[in-house]
Image 1 (cartoon, one colour):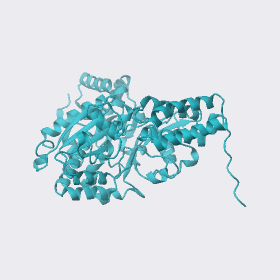
Image 2 (cartoon, rainbow, N blue to C red):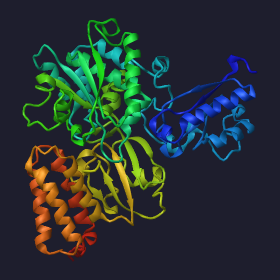
Image 3 (tube, helix red, strand yellow):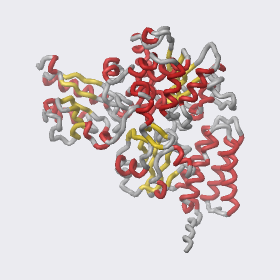
Image 4 (cartoon, rainbow, N blue to C red):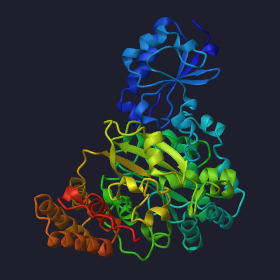
Length: 529
């Protein structure tokens, strides 16, 4: 048998996407086969690279880098060993599963990974791995500056809330820091419920220490001493990984009465949500975190002044907080130099739906939808033409091809009535019926509404009925106007984005795909001579 010093490292992802595709069984089969052949190996359960269409993506460490083998099944293991995959020189053996050096895959190599720089590279629960990849550099920098300077640095970086609202994170931090209170809180909104989104999950499962460090920095900057990560109950693997990582961080002195030996105290725990979509709204989340029914609070007061238990509270999304460490490690100017306009830095775009190469793509703001779909996504999985793309979750607009070249930027999208949201991109081919999808948007709102405000609670139910009548053949002016008036009432009168944004997909479908409602397409006016 080979000596332990010669053990070959084999990486098998442990995130829930890979697990759903049999990664645990693959890891066990590799261990069993190596033992039977007398070969020394070390299996590392790393996070996913976000190349989800290749999962389980197994990698072998070679002198040239990590060689990948895609969509590996238990039935492939013997043939991989027969092909001498452990002695590969880096280009991969002549095996159907071989994809070559993973770092050289165009899908990954063209990205600008800042928040997700460690994704797929490390064992998510190895502190040594984390420290070897710039871990704690941001926290140490934050501890060396005043809280006011830390808040100013975040504001200077241009980081805006990545959960969809795009509110400047530095303003929230500065407001909480300035608020007089004996107790302040940092709350991470990990209730990722938008269709086609999974960046929060990948972050929590693949790089939990990054989120933990970001939350500690937020506490140091604002004077908050207690943090909560509110995770949706549908993410059991993320919850387990976070709890294990928090325990290790506490043992290493990152948490507790003296953060890294400083005068700052900070504690952190995971809270499991109960599965309500509306708890992704920050005030409904606070109600749930307090043990109450998750319904929306009226604002003002804003959570930064009166949040959890009535105390000043920073509420940021997973990606917002996981981005904080690199900003403090490399400086605000470094991060601000990515992006365009008021949309600074990068965003992890998530390609889902009818897409050939689904996965996570982190790029600076300004990339176009067409580039993401065609260059990264490879078009539809069905091979049919793309007809519509929904950006920003189930309450996002449907964009026709005429809008695919607009740069992905908060203001550029707002100018055409669209939203970037959480970066979720769901692709539909030419067999999709947009009237049916619009009806589902209203139905979704009716199911998930907290019921507190009438426009959302009643408007969504009436919306389903009106679209049903239109799809049934009643396309009179009266019905079209009724649908538009109903949408206007929901946009203007709803307490939160649940009801306020449900009309976005409906109106965009009605405007760009009227034929699906049985209406005649609007002909563009001829240009003046």
